[in-house]
Structure formats: C-alpha cells, structure tokens
Length: 297
Image 1: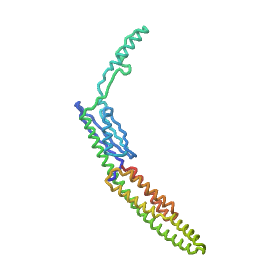
Image 2: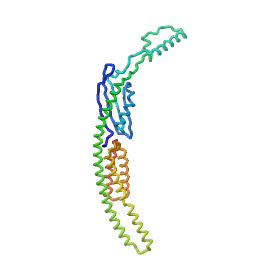
Image 3: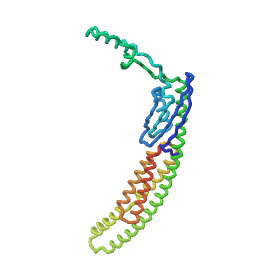
Image 4: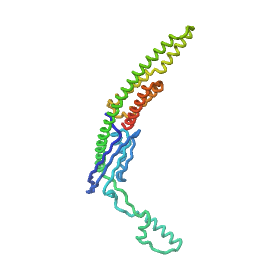
C-alpha cells in the first residue's frame, strides 16, 4: 500500500463538561509533504497540556509529513476562571504610596476606581479541563487522524498507479535503447573488422596495438551494463511499491536517482539520435516519478 503525505479533514463536536456546560469543538487536521515528521499545532491555552499526547498520536498514524492540527472552542472563554484581586500586588501598591506620602509629605487618598486602573491588580487564570474531557478530545483527534489517513491512502493509490504507468513507459524506452544499441554495436564491429582487414602489412605488434585501440573504442560506447542496471532498478521500484512496508517514498526517490544516473551515463556514451530521443523520454518520466515519490510516506 502506497500512502500520500497530503490529506485534510475537519469535524465539529459538542463536548459536555463536568461543569454541566457544553463547548463546541472544531478540529482540523491538514498534512503536507515533508522530509520528516513535523507538527504545527494551534490549541487553546486550556488544551495546551494535550499537545505532547496529540503529537505522539499523529506521529504513530502519519509516520512522515508536516501535520497541522487546529482546535478551536466556542465559547472561547469557557475555560476562563473568575476574576480575582491580586492582593499581594495591591498591598505592594499601598505600601509604596504610603512611603511616597511619608517621604514627600504629599497627601491624598486612593479610590477603588483609581486602584483598578493600575496594572496587574486583577488575575484571571485558565481552568484546566477534567480527565474525562481530555480523553474525549484525544479520542476525537484519533478519529480524525483515521479520516485523514483514508484520504492519504486514496491519494497514495493514485500516485502508485501513475508511477506504474511511468515504469511501463521506461521499460519500453530502455528496451528500445537496448535494441538500437545492439544494432549500433553490430555495425561498429563490422566496421572494425573491415578496418582490420585493410591494415597494411606491418609488424604483428603494431597490428595488435591498432586492434586493441579499435576494440577500446567499442567498449567506450557499449552501454549494455548500464541497460542491465537500469532494468534492475525498475524492478526495485516495482518491488518497493508492492511491499507491505508503509514508508516507501524515500526508497523510491533514492532508486529513481540511481535510474537517473544510469540514463545520464547512457546519454554520455552515445551520440545516436534515436537513443538521444529515448533518453530524453526517460528523463521526463523519471522526473515525474520523483515528483510523486516526494509526496509519498
């Protein structure tokens, strides 16, 4: 099974709290391709303690990719505690004012209205959520990861089919390259044989040296080894796609790089127009496979 790194899902849920109130949750998960597993989470402050658990949950499900998780709550102030006076701060203000009066002789009384204007005289902390609500939210996120996984699997199947089409085209192209190369090698061998027959009657050492030079020229354009390795790499990609392992993208990408290396060597050894055209076709197909591989888990 081939799985894409791209997926999206969202859901809404009404959550009952222990305080006999309800809160409307909106949870969204989006995943994009990435070299590793990464996260960007946007959670209300009251749910920030869930982040570690949610990261582990998403990592276990997605394995690789950039996961964007957003949770919003309505009403947004549901977890706000009541406003309380910051008595230590207020006491500190009053002591400071008394000290100013005693030092400077300035008289005056501080009213409640004036005191309320001073910074940090009130506190309002976030209330934590209860264990039952924590478990419910984690369960909702887990359900949503399964939906995202389904969309990633569906997209991965499409990517696998596309790669298989490219592999079939590459197989046809490399076979055509092999046939054209065999014809060229046969023509060159005939030409070498004719050249050897036309050699003037010189010493055996000179004839042997010239013969070795001609055969060396033949080996320089021989691409049989590259063709064999190219075909083997094609089989490797097919094996990776068919394997039960989930993480396949990097292996397909690395194998595709080997295919590119072989086709570049074939191009460098040949100036034949037919082979050059087939090489270009192979490069185009390989680039499309690499694009797909970079979006596969």
